[in-house]
Image 1 (cartoon, helix red, strand yellow):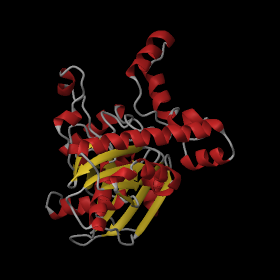
Image 2 (cartoon, rainbow, N blue to C red):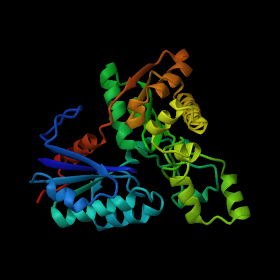
Image 3 (cartoon, rainbow, N blue to C red):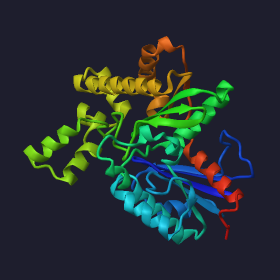
Image 4 (cartoon, helix red, strand yellow):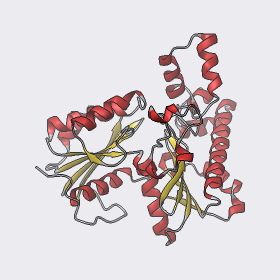
Length: 345
């Protein structure tokens, strides 16, 4: 079965095509074809260039609203993804474009693999916000994101260590960033919440801030919802503090050149990362390993060294695992196909 996995992130669009047999391996084999382009690339041109045939297409969907498990994309699922585009504006709209483009070019079954699905095991004490209880009935709750990456990283960590009864803090650090507290392969808590904006400082996103700041900006400075959205999602984080870039590589280069604002940006990033790792450890009651994945997590050694020193008292293992979200999507699509929930054309 030839499965195409599509992963539209906040800064890139990644594709992977595999010829997959039943019971695919945990670690990814060499793909038939793969590509990574910048967000905003011509998707129709990209899809027309890949080798045919394609039997099934799987999409990373950041926010599925009421849908919490991988499912065939129907008109109802499509509508729900569109509705949640207001909650995940940097992702869902682009993912809808990919779904519609695939429909025009391939006309094959499509599967939505939801980023929040891995966090469906959160206890209600973790996912209910301490606002009015009515919020919960309105769907305002912690969903968590990057679940596909956290799921892969935690499973590979268990295989590497040789145990499944583990307390892991998985750190997905890229342009977007989040942590998960994983106990025995199940997510117990995570730093992202109702939207992908909560939690860690990120490339251009602020992460968690005092809500009173937003009230002040609205009351005293006349900010609109659109302005707040732009500032918090596109003009904050590493970019907002450094004034240089949301790319950690460029920030570190500026630090080496003596730029003080870049140094401050890195220091805040490291501080907030360690603070949130501590929170995840508190949820788990300890940690057997810290797992780093994603572009920053895998490649920023100075950041990992800071975290390792801060938590040296735990005697926890530190693992670096290459992010394989596209392969995890392929595996999930094969699982659904094998369960006879999708009829191939």
